[in-house]
Length: 226
Image (cartoon, rainbow, N blue to C red; front, side, top):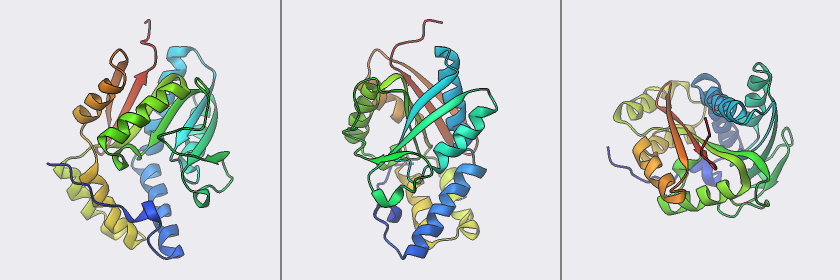
């Protein structure tokens, strides 16, 4: 299945305020029901275990209203890990104050080197073209002390079919456009790994497959010693 870039409506808030709000509610449902929160929690748990951290600071890039960051923190509490997230998003209108957040560009993160234990993103990588994803990876690894984390979709014909089958569940016409568009422009695991290897040739990269065509990726800034 060839990758096809289809602009997503929510990227530019192309709809009425109600349609945008309903589409954001759909995204929350996807992350809650189909594993996005679980994936990010698993990745952060692995970083915490490898680096022996009981408290972990992490930057959630393109984290919108902070729903994933907040719910992931709650999930980590069950593992005895205290998370301190900060959200960075391109639009002030996406930040609601529930989780600390700042406006910023993923390709030029407004933070000093080694500012966070981990830098992660959820359902964002597929929005970037390969060269921009490469730049983002460089920035994420610059700002992270230990690891860069990616949770994203896996492009697959069956996944595309599922995105259409889900139409009755979607609240917004924006979601009915963006859900299949996201699958079409998503990457495969091999494509992501090749891009990340170009960004960090000497890094150890872990690839994990999760429920319903989700991938979890860890790029270790320094290869683990164990």
